[in-house]
Image 1: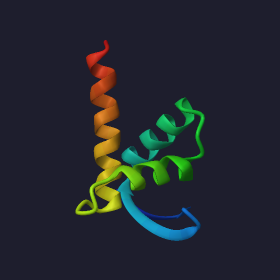
Image 2: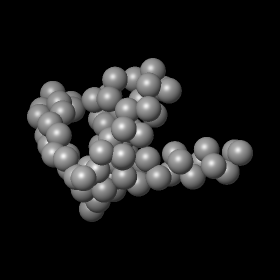
Image 3: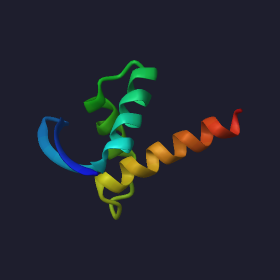
Image 4: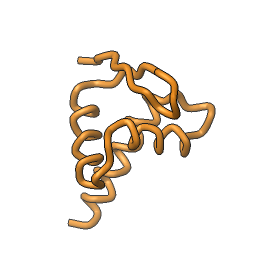
Length: 73
């Protein structure tokens, strides 16, 4: 299920819409890196291609992390 969530990044509120599984995994990644979820999202936002919306960038970030960890197995 896609859920719209509000977060504050770089001092302004924004909303993102991602599926629960992506959100849960993003929270796990943030925890593993000892970062607040908002800081993780701010990092993703800063690194994304301007042509890619933030929700898609989050999904791609989570996918890239999963693939990187799978390759290490």
